[in-house]
Image 1 (cartoon, rainbow, N blue to C red):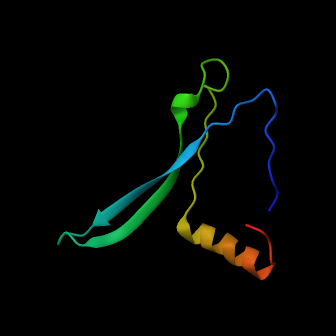
Image 2 (cartoon, rainbow, N blue to C red):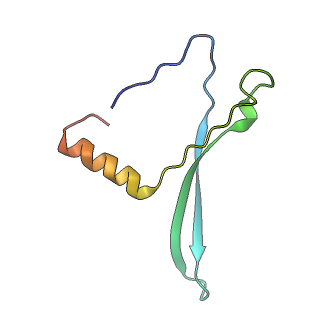
Length: 76
């Protein structure tokens, strides 16, 4: 996969994984959910504050990309 480079005068906004467990009516684990969210508190007014980022990844999408990487012997 390609690497992205950030301009020297720009600052990267960090991200973190958020995990949730969905329970059924019996209180048993039904679904595990995860999402990648940006750390918006690191944005600066007038610099990158007005920009909107909406990175959403699903587990099946990640699995597809990893399968492609394995088939093509790409570095992950």
